[in-house]
Length: 84
Image 1 (cartoon, rainbow, N blue to C red):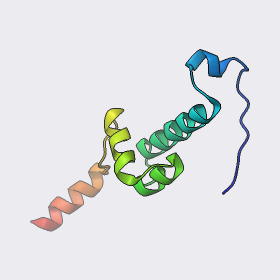
Image 2 (image 1 turned 60 degrees about the horizontal axis):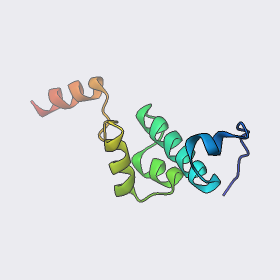
Image 3 (image 1 turned 120 degrees about the vertical axis):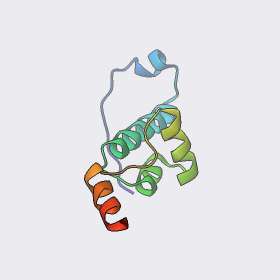
């Protein structure tokens, strides 16, 4: 696994009341949720990035009011046309 060092203000851990490990987990989850919301990663990939099971990642998406099922309206139109 690759590692990435990202600089943050020195007092950020005190500000958010998190340990370094908790902060890192929060950042990984926030990134995974945002990338999933934008359609850049799948649920499985998002879960892996966040270090969660897929079920826990789906719960995290739901808690953040991110649509769990993604679809493209154009794809839905095609599906409906082919179903007729």
